[in-house]
Image 1: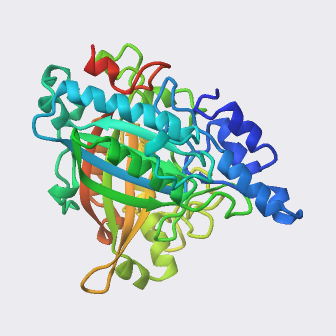
Image 2: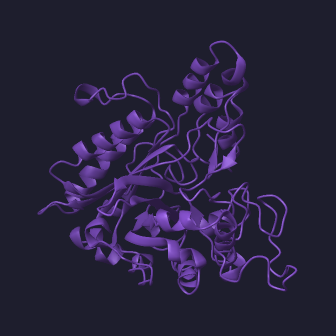
Image 3: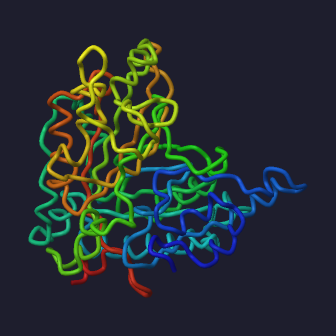
Length: 415
């Protein structure tokens, strides 16, 4: 198995499909997949590409849970649950055992027995990943207050927050991603059904990304503002990646070893206002060219921006309040997080404005050293703040991966 949980079966199934195999290198988070040459030109190529996509399998068991360094999928569901009245540690343990068993089978493309709905009957694994986490309230509900990590202390308030409490937080959190919408829905329905009697849905959100093979080459994803989004993500090849994203094996508390913390934010994009801006004005807000994500100071997407460069008018080329400038790790004491979002569109509101934006999910070893300092800096003067609104929020402890024969969270619930 490779470091990001991609199986030998996936590598064999995607051989020759350049973009899909890219994930095997461990650096594909935030990138779309490219079509294979067979799909592009050979007879029957479309069928071959579909077979490769369906055969894409992510492993459930491993050092870390899937869905963190797994390459971005084209369909996602985020769902939070609250334990039902009377349910405690015993019921939570039984639920996580059921959920883990179901996730393992689903991610392998296997049906769930007589109770299976057959929604994904004709599909393979399709890159499905299922990830589980615990909210701060989970620990009081289960009598495990002493095991609650300090990193789950509430996030501070930010000026762009317009948070709906009914769509925030939760005892339990599940992230589902897949490259086929029926496979993703099948997993969502199975997780919800397995929760019956132990937990009820608190909130649920649906997201999407570009489909694998939609671009001629692997590319960083775009958001609904049309901007290349995710250029500065830390990469698994970087020597301090694990230190920034995962709790160390000897970390505190012990049950969080090799886990991570997920900050989840539903960020509405005020697209009507954004789209009134001219092309250059949009680029000034971000600090990058819209066409290819390169910095306004020149080069390619991965070129380091020259923050001191000035134009003929004597002003810095990348404005002082540009999003790309303010969000850079070197502008925030080295704070970094792995962003792995989905876009969303939930129709139109009463004013006819699109209810659309970003289901922002970021991963870090400690949110107080990752998300919080960056968001505080953005809160003080990011030009993008005029065009977004944070409408829901959650913070979840995501334990390390389950070993064979274990379920996710077993070290907490049975320790």
